[in-house]
Length: 266
Ligand SMILES: Cc1cc2nc3c(=O)[nH]c(=O)nc-3n(C[C@H](O)[C@H](O)[C@H](O)COP(=O)(O)OP(=O)(O)OC[C@H]3O[C@@H](n4cnc5c(N)ncnc54)[C@H](O)[C@@H]3O)c2cc1C
Ligand code: FES
Picture 1 (cartoon, rainbow, N blue to C red):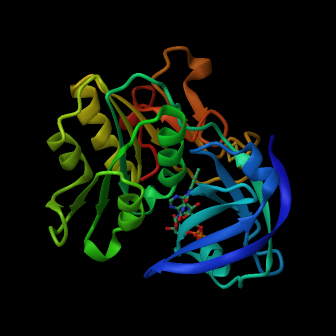
Picture 2 (picture 1 turned 30 degrees about the vertical axis):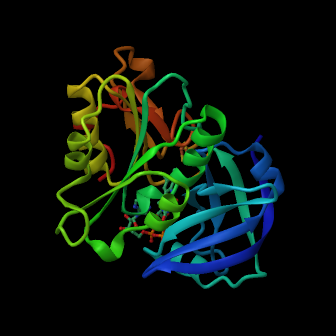
């Protein structure tokens, strides 16, 4: 069940240049949350910016959640200045969650930049509920922008690093690293990152008949299915089901259900 809650910030620290983790005391959200869901965070001075900002849930704890975010514009800059002990209004959990089907030989998460944010909770669920250890493809422009690599290694997840400029790991894109791992239909892929990356990951998976679930992004106003501001085009033939709301039918979609050529948000 979704709630709107004033949450105490119990920790807030920089984990890499321009990237922060915020930990929130939010037991009712944690109790209802599943990996892949998101929250809408209210970060404003006076009334501006008016709209809450959507953020994926990174970890689900007993008494709260953490969120990993990149400082981009006004909303995240204001958020970045909120001290430990302050209170922030949060709506969540929202959206659907990553499917966790049993029976695959390999579970592979592909994260580009801050797109890695929902994967710690997913990895924990795969380990606890399915008894499997997922692998991670961590992709970034360069070495300094890689996130959470040590954390995943500590969890025991094999980590495959790929950077655009070759400053760490393999030189290339996330989709190149995925192709090199030779996924087949016994592999389940999850991905999150820039749209161009997710479209390329989808191509690799489609070629090999691999199921892939992507966490999509869209600019959101209400976050809860009302405003229709976050719609994406699907491959559904039925016109009534052609457009899907990222906040309600998503943010997790089977990549075969998305019309990548229709221009999902860049
Ligand atoms: C379901 C969902 C989960 C998300 N999870 C995370 C997360 O875990 N960590 C994280 O750092 N970010 C996440 N985002 C993106 C995050 O919501 C935006 O980065 C944030 O809203 C930007 O707010 P701002 O006020 O700082 O920037 P703005 O001033 O609104 O914009 C600054 C720049 O960011 C771009 N931008 C704005 N909204 C988005 C968006 N939704 N996606 C991509 N670019 C955007 C703008 O076009 C502009 O270039 C998520 C988005 C969605 C929809
Ligand atoms: S953000 Fe309003 S319907 Fe999705």
